[in-house]
Every structure is written in C-alpha cells, then in structure tokens.
Length: 306
Ligand code: AMP
Image (cartoon, rainbow, N blue to C red; front, side):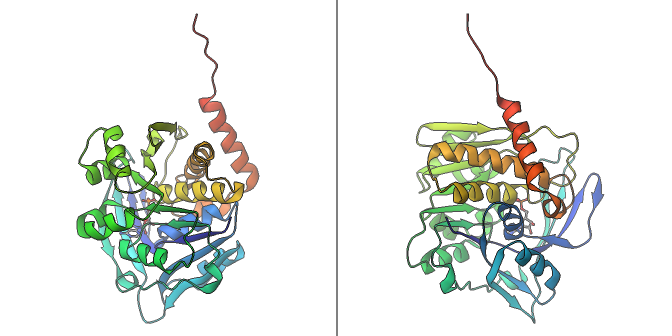
C-alpha cells in the first residue's frame, strides 16, 4: 500500500544526562522516513530552509524516499527544536522551539502522491496536517496522526478538528491525560476515541505502548535496554515502523496492528541507542529481524493453571 508521510524536518539540539549534541538532523518526518524506508517506499511532505544539508536529502533519496513534496525555502531557516531529558530519560523539557519555515508552511500534495492509501501525519502544525487530508482527492484507507503537548497548549481547537478526521491517533501517556483530562489511561482512551479516532495508541516510553480499539486493548512492551543514549525520535520511529508494517502487509485489521506496534517498538529500540537519527541510518534487515525475535522471546510464555 502506498505510504505518504507528513511532518517536520528539523535541526535538534539535545541534552541528556550523558551528553549534549550540537545542532543535529531531526524532525518527526525525518525519523519516520528513515525507519519506514526499511520496509516500503515513502512519499514525503515537509519543508526545510536553505540551511538544511543537501547531503541529508540525498541520503533519504538513496533509500527510496521520494521528496517531491518537500519544499526547500532557500531564504529561510529550518525548524529548530531543543530539549533536555531528565535522569529517567522518559521525560523531557522542551527548551526552545523555533518554527522558522514551519510558521507559514502551506503543503502542496503532488499529483504523484494522490495514490496514497496510508497517510502518516507526523508531528506538525495541526492545520497543516488537516490541509494535507483535504488535498487528497480520494480519502486514504487509513489516516494515522501523531501530535504533542505543544499543539494542545497553543492550538487546541485546530488540533481537535484534525483529530476528528483521523483513524489512528498516537500520543504519549502524559499527552493522553492532558487531552482527555482523565488520569486513568483506560478512561482517557475512551474519551479520546469519542473525539474521532477508532484506534488509539498510547506510548509509555520505556514501559511500552498500548493499542486501544472499541473495548479491546493490546500491550507491546519496550525492550529492556542496558543503555538508552537519546530517546529523541523514538515516538516517530515507532510510528514509522507501525505504518510501514501495515503498508507492506496490506492489512489494516486490529490483529495486524498488534504486529505493527511490535515492529514499531523494535525499531524505536534502535533509535535510542545513539544520538539523533544516527543508529537508524546504520541498521540492516538482519539486525531488525534479530531485534523482532527478541520481542517475541520477551513476551512469549506458556501458562497452565492447575
Ligand atoms: P519524539 O521524540 O518522537 O517525540 O520526536 C522528536 C522530534 O520531534 C524532534 O526531532 C523534533 O525536531 C520534532 N519536534 C519537536 N517539537 C515539534 C513540534 N512542535 N512540531 C513538529 N516537530 C517537532
């Protein structure tokens, strides 16, 4: 199934208890594309400034990511985000967000993207996400959306409108609580699904992810890792693995979404092993298969009650 990805492409500056990065390549759509392109072709929609390295765009092209929908605004600066992780590496503070090119971004969906069957709306201005949905002449079979607390704080109405248009919403646990006003994640899930999405994925960092649909719930753990170097992009990489699995297997059932969140978790476990996108640029299919196998062993058990 053809996959279109929308989201930020960025410069990030990251501080963790173990180190600090200079300005490195980041952005939701960047992580999603690096991850998903292991499995399926990706058509990307984003915007960068003249300061974004051509070599980074070329590296994505070489992996089969189509960049026709990525605007390069030569006179402007790329979106910049900086964040600082707490000691537990599960929570972070945003230190700075400079929207730059994102401020007035008007996405244009190329004609060649109109065959889109799965639309992945990575983290971005909610109005830009909904504009891409509107430009699709035929509604994609599945629309998946990621977002973050930043948009809940400054553009809640736009965000709620976009949420009402999608099939699957991805948020982390604190965002699910903020969006619903409920502490219990089960109650939060019910309230959020009433806003529109038929499926909800709540990411819980090192504690895995929950997939909700109607009255069903499925849990995928995160792989216990000895060292987490930089969690930035783990959520986007998770989303990339999730949609890529659905696109590759051409199966949008709840059962297949369970496998898709396992692949998402496996891919996210690579992302956190090095700063930025670095680890995602190195992995190969043998390593991915081995990692997925570790997940199978992690949760596989027999039990017989006597
Ligand atoms: P994650 O760690 O998966 O939540 O995603 C981190 C990525 O999201 C970073 O590479 C940032 O560049 C990007 N990001 C942070 N804030 C925003 C925002 N407000 N809009 C779009 N992308 C963002």
